[in-house]
Amino acid sequence: MRFDIVTLFPEIFSGFVGESLLRKAIDKRRLEVVTHDLRNWSKDKHQKVDDRPYGGGPGMVIKVEPVVECIEEIRRLHAEPGELILLTPQGERLTQPLVEQLAEFPRLILLCGRYEGFDQRVVDLLQPRELSIGDYVLNGGEVAAMVVIDTVMRLIPGVLGDEQSARSDSFSQENRGLEAAQYTRPRSYRGCDVPEVLLSGDHAEIDAWRQSQSYHKTLSRRADLVGSEGDSPRRPETNEGEKREPVN
Ligand code: JCH
Image (cartoon, rainbow, N blue to C red; front, side, top):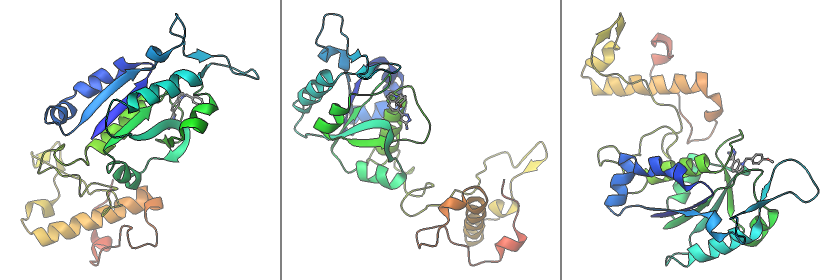
């Protein structure tokens, strides 16, 4: 899969792209990540790509011509036209099912704004998919673009280590609840002990305990994830609910 990132601050991505998991996936040719500096498509000698808003108001708006011409040019760099994604607080919310959909594309083009965002004609002419990572305001689209890459890349075959598949994680297709607590050595630390059941070796009992933990944790923290539909976390068949250890 290929990611093209259009940004005024390409250096923001260098640490992220150099991180070992992403680096390894790039080396293995599972992923390609290319940044494009929008200033290269500026029309003037000062590399200006923003201007004051018509009608007045605070801040600056990114001009339409550099963006449209940049996207046209980078589309020609590769056989796949790419799914164009604009990061914006006004977009559709990024959720795990949407991440799973995005992972099917061979190429994603991520358009990152700054200031007060883009001239509306960017949206009208290019008709991008508009995505928001959540209901809070970032200073620009770069962090949101990294969230898209981070969530999508781990679904690409060969990107995660083979034993560490993305399958059973919270919010994945078959698991919409929160995960049970996890422990590793030592068995006891400052009076805090690993639950006995996890040391029992009884895998049926361990499974039941984890399901119960998951269910009660989801209900207490994220009741919004427990719907009436079949894909929601289910109350386990056992009576664990009555004799359970507290979920924190
Ligand atoms: C962005 C801004 C005030 C935008 C500029 C480009 C995405 N989920 C999510 N939160 N925030 C973003 C995001 C993405 C791209 C840009 N800003 C700052 C500030 C705005 O309203 C007028 C719009 C924020």
